[in-house]
Length: 390
Image 1 (cartoon, helix red, strand yellow):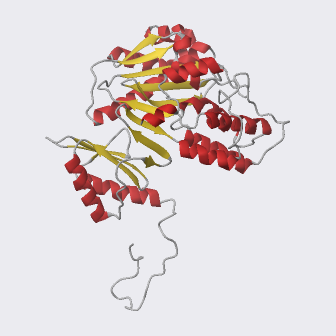
Image 2 (cartoon, one colour; image 1 turned 180 degrees about the horizontal axis):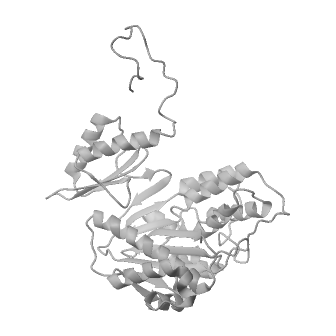
Image 3 (cartoon, helix red, strand yellow; image 1 turned 45 degrees about the vertical axis):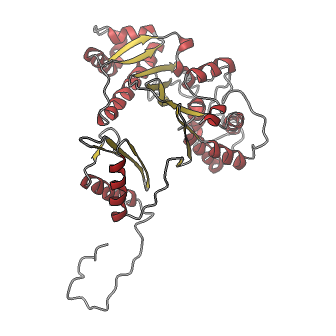
């Protein structure tokens, strides 16, 4: 704290400052706290990642690497330099009040289990709490998070539901999708109607909860291997929205065969063809690969192999490789040049994959149960019994 202007040495000694508002809880508090934390980390020799500003990395000349990831005041410390980690704890204790919780088991609602196979993350307790909150503890499970025949619109004539209740439910589902890519598309769909939810939207959101009732222990398994190759699957559902006919982009990326990031989001503009919709999805997938490459370079993990981008649309792939500017590609000129530039540099190579083998298909549309389960297993989203092995 600093004294206000006008209060100096001439002020009477019996004068005090009355605190009207604490920093904690203000909008400025996260920035002030993170700014101070960053200065402390920099003074200890850590470098802030340019790909993710909450990631701090320190490479020792002989011992190895230490990595710090911070979310507000929750911190994860990892790496192969145990001595540096001990020194870091000592230095942080001098500057802040800290509590060391030992080996990572639980972080922001995410459960972490370690085994010989690798690291398994899930949100089983979070799902159990969600079922209790929604009164669906004894509900009948369903095989898929969304009916493949359902097309959600504004449904203006339908009965309105409690907006705050709906927003809270969908908000909790959004956070859950951090470890559950199998519900990402369904959650993305119901989140488009937060401003004026109707009964049909609430039933679609509750169906996701019913699906979670039957699969509470699903999560992501990061297997141990020395492979650092990056690859991505992209897909688009052309004009899938019945509200504004915008397409849905879906992509998922793999590092060494492990699923690391995914996204399902409606595109910003209306696509004029399926090839254009797929092309925009390719551009988003490439951006994600380039971002992951920056993170890996900060960690000094390099791979000489080009990053692979899988797409199930041959027209989009041919447009990406064709340097000739056609009339039908003028409206996607920026994306076309961006993709062509990455291809020419050798960073990316595009490969065709049949639609039935495109893992990102689960992020763009509702699927039938058999097809849905086949993609879930291919995408290394292990079913709940794997949790017992970890």
